[in-house]
Image 1 (tube, rainbow, N blue to C red):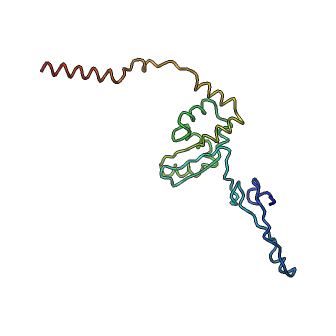
Image 2 (cartoon, rainbow, N blue to C red):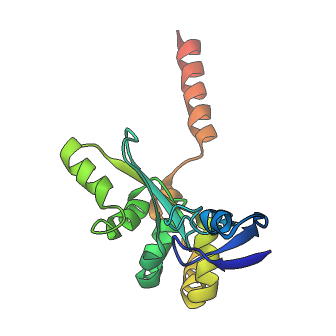
Amino acid sequence: MKTSPCPDCENGQVEVIDTGSVNGSIDTWLASYPKLKTVDCETCGGTGEVTSFAIAAHCHSDCQTVDIEFDAVDWFKQCSASDLKDLIDCDWRGDYPADDVARFFEDSSTAPLFQYVATSGEGFECYVNEDDAIAWLEEHRPELLEQVQEVAIAPSAPSDAAALRWPIWVGLALSLAIAYIIWVAA
């Protein structure tokens, strides 16, 4: 099979299938020209809209009235190690660092969501595809990924609050001891 550039999005390739030769007069042949058909583009599916993203992300209003898929690659091109660590710490979704990714695109691809949220008073959620992000970072910004991994691996000193906490069983043992003393005294 032969391929040609997608006529809809010009990014992908489509397979061109010959539907057969035309027998008969030149008029019959001209009426059926072109006798080729295309198979849907793998990039846009024949819609002209690119559906494969370098880093897929998805955001929606809380009621899911507005639901948008977008490419988050531009956010990753400019993010700091701190921004990336925060996104990783919130498991790539459902918290302020992920929402910041959607906000980065509020004048472009996520604009309809923010217009809806502004008028409805609802909240929204954003989800970033972790696998896409890691793959892109490994290829395009490996130094940033290394910085974040170094911070994540670095040992941290226990906080003072953690050192002062008693294990639960100590509290339970003290409660039982006090209850026993009260019962014996009564």
